[in-house]
Amino acid sequence: MPYLSLYRKYRPRNFAEIVGQRHVTQTLVNAIKAGRIAHAYLFCGPRGTGKTSTARVLAMALNCEKGPTSEPDATCESCRRIIAGSALDVIEIDAASNRGIDEIRELRERVGLAAADARTKVYIIDEVHMLTGEAFNAFLKTLEEPPSHVVFVLATTEPHRVLPTILSRCQRFDFHRIGVRDIEAAIRSIGEKESVAIDDSAVAMLAHAADGSFRDSLTLLDQAIAYAEGPVTAEVVSEILGGIDIDLVMEFTDVLLRRDIGGALALVDRVVGEGKDLRQLVDTLIGHYRNLLVLAVDRRGHEALVLPEESAKRLAAQAKLLTTDEITGTLDLLAELDRELRFTSQPRLLVELTAVRICRRAPSAKGVPARREEPRTAAAEPRSDPKVPEPAIAEEVAAGPAAAPTEAEGVQEVGLAEIKRRWGDLLAELRKGRRASLGGYLIAATPVSLEGDSLTLSFPRKYEFHYMQMSKNEEHLKAVSDAIQSMFARSVKVKCQLEQAESGPRPTAHPKRVQEALTTFPGSEVEE
Image 1 (cartoon, helix red, strand yellow):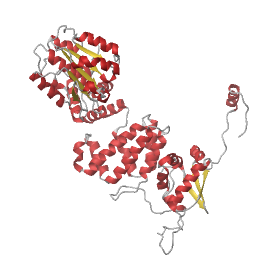
Image 2 (cartoon, helix red, strand yellow):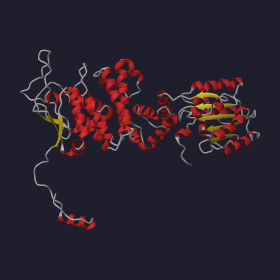
Image 3 (tube, one colour):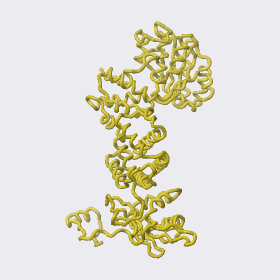
Image 4 (tube, helix red, strand yellow):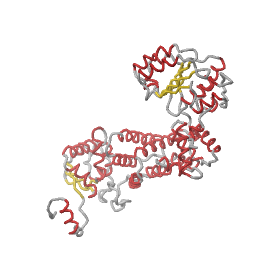
């Protein structure tokens, strides 16, 4: 016997089993009890929220041998046929594949026929918004005045695409996304019935991943049970979702709180290396910072967050280190990044640049561990990770702290140290508007010298592409000069240089390989 998937096995068989739609089921129950059944219903709502299942339960209620009844027994011959999908008088039509006028004409011809062996003929038309305009028009008269033994149930995820003339002839019910707690309770119940142990954290992850769809939650649970071959844990769910697990999000947030640019870029590299989607990382971070905002605004907000206990504790600890302004500022940056990722061919660069911008934001007054911004020597601030191109926030010892200008002294000319100190702010300004790509090219650059009015930016050799994009484009160089003029009131000419390659003999190609290449691709060997 073929395996029956969980969402089919546990499809509701009465109104009480329909999850999270009491406003719909209670109305239908009362209508059946009062004998006030409409000739046409329109069920609207997101996928997986029970529209078709409710239509089938309604058909069972109207045709149960004990009915019409608000509590079909699911055991009589009529109910069993509807459950099995073999009832001749419960006709399900997929409007996505039967959307033309010919199919509707055929439906109109059959509507007038008496029911074969049921009390009421029920037509369930799924995705009704897919019908063509001609088909809708042909359907109008039948829908308005159907035979007394016929009930239409139209289901759609896009009610705005249904003609107003159709809407006005139906009783409309809007199905809501199912709440996380309702889905969690259903998952636990089904786990018990299936004799499968499911961790609380796994239940929470499945409920959140379902995004309000009960059917999706059972499909994911089915997959998790098959994969686990035992208890379903958070690790199992994380594997099947192929997404960003909560520990990684917590770690990423910790790195951003420490203003650790090297650590942030390393984590981005890890996500890319594991083949995970950077957009999913950003979406997950947005959700995480939203949770932080809830806790920052109201410490009792944890009651509204459905998280495993350990994750809730870590979240609360992070929330204590942030102000609401910092959280909302980071959310703004992440939201902007989420929009830009839809249209970019360089998602990694944008994610890295945003991580740098978050790390370089001014620390809050709540004591968030942050990189100090006071002047210091370059020797006293070595880079934590030589692989990460982070402009040094250094200042020559002899220069000392820059004194604030006074009216008597006039405005002092800004030096290299101040440009280095505020380099992150300048990148943020460049990233606005049409200059967004400049911030990406300059993420690897470091201001290294200011001689007269000539500012030199140095690029690591492995970022040669960024160097080429800047050094060969006069408009880019002028944009940087203009930004410096605007921020520091100093006119400079920007130049770029590429760091010297490491000394030592350059490896040469193996003679045999060179000959093989020359044989395959016509050409000649040259010295560079």
